Length: 159
Image (cartoon, rainbow, N blue to C red):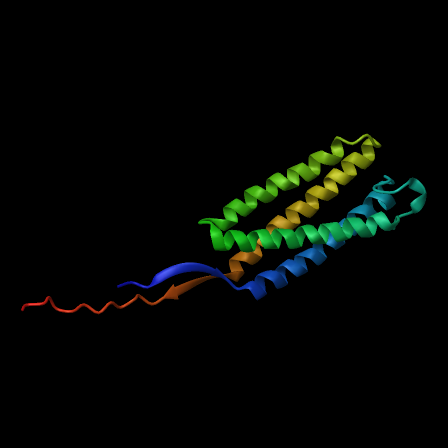
């Protein structure tokens, strides 16, 4: 009898990668806002008078970006345990969520520059989360091999 294979996940490695991804996503949000406000002079998430660092909205945006990375990690963990091709489903889900995050600011009634800058920042953050978590999941994926169950067979009763 052959060993029985079933997928598993090294949860510690996956969630450590998810936490690192959350830091990357938060920093991407901050850098994106700094570039938009400082170099392009577009007021993203704050009135023009707030400067490059902006206001509390910058911090909130960074926190939400980090939270999105942690949610993505949870999604990947669930998919690894539940579906046949977790990385494929994860990629599709994340691409669609990222598209929503790109299109949403474009539908707001704010300055066109702010719309585009926010959409680009969301795109970069979404793609970074997707790529990093997808890559990290392959390192966290484990195949568990259960030994076959030996069944004791009695000879037929010949009474």
